[in-house]
Amino acid sequence: MDVRPITFTVDPSAPDPTETVYGLGANALDPRAVASIFEAKGRPASNPVIAHVADPADARTLAADWPHAAAVLAQRFWPGPLTLVLPKRATVPDVLTAGGPTVAVRCPAHPVARALIAAAGVPVAAPSANRSTELSPTRAEHVRKSLDGRIDMILNGGPCPGGIESTVVDVTADPVRLLRPGLVSATELVAVLGQPVAVGPAADGVAKSPGQMAKHYSPRTPVVLVSTDEVEALGRNTRHYGLIWWSPQPELSEAVGYPAGQVCRVFGLPADPERASALLYDTLHKLDLSNLELILVEMPPDTPEWAGVRDRLIRAAAT
Ligand code: TXA
Ligand code: MG
Image (cartoon, rainbow, N blue to C red; front, side, top):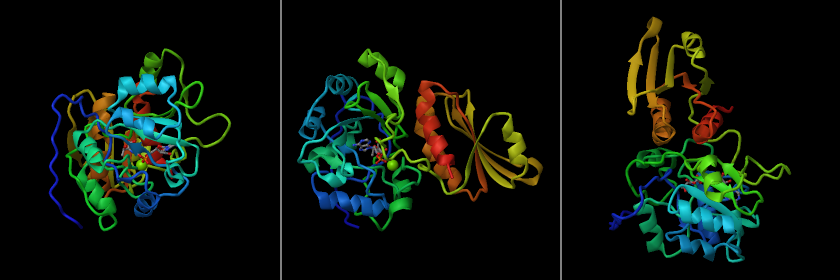
């Protein structure tokens, strides 16, 4: 591994870094560099990768067109946890877009990510820095656990304050389509656009966001989603299990219980979508390392604000 000192200046006027997860970066304009990302992750070539820019204006160097919705959303949410799917320019390599006519672009808010992209001087292609289908990393040590030996370097920027991947919005569709829920909710998109937003894959059956595979973001330990009433009954038949529940407290709580000679590792996550997102993957990583037979997760409410967390939990539990 190549270890070199890098100095970053953090801009104190930058917005809150609601940053999402660690990314595995390479020059988005170099097909060989992008191909090496697919190789390191074991990612199917059919799943396109997001290009990251340091400055919102740089998105237009990748997009063949800049629809009104893109201008409105970028103005409000960039830098931040929102990805826009746009018509691609001919200069954007096909390997990045999985051969498709669109390119996904995002301007991240984290000062380290932005400084890295600015120093690179090119848009940086970056999927989440984990082996394909595994849990996304929200700490440098999660990246090391998943990709050690397969990548050149890890930049440790501390725990990610956002915690789940960006909201992906297709602005080439009419109406604009929410492809992946995240920290920017459908409610916020509608409010900013002043018009309705379609949700989920396009009705014509064409996979517009191929990364929306049923099994994704998964720990190695089986995950079972439960209602509050089911927790006790399911736990009774398992010797070692984990439990995530939603607590009225603003902080994470952690406890170990010994019901009937069993071992149960319990995390109470704050019942607030933003706080819960920031802690979700880290908690799943911890439970995954605890030698459990099962991870039980209480399902949060079915509201737009919880859509990102619910989406990740449903995919984590898919078999
Ligand atoms: O927060 C994030 O989005 C993180 C950080 C590193 O930026 N990245 C991330 O990348 O989650 P990844 O590759 O794990 O997920 C990218 C998602 C996938 O669902 C992919 O299918 C979708 O974006 N996507 C990429 N390009 C697309 C395109 N041209 N059209 C539709 N969906 C696209
Ligand atoms: Mg990913």
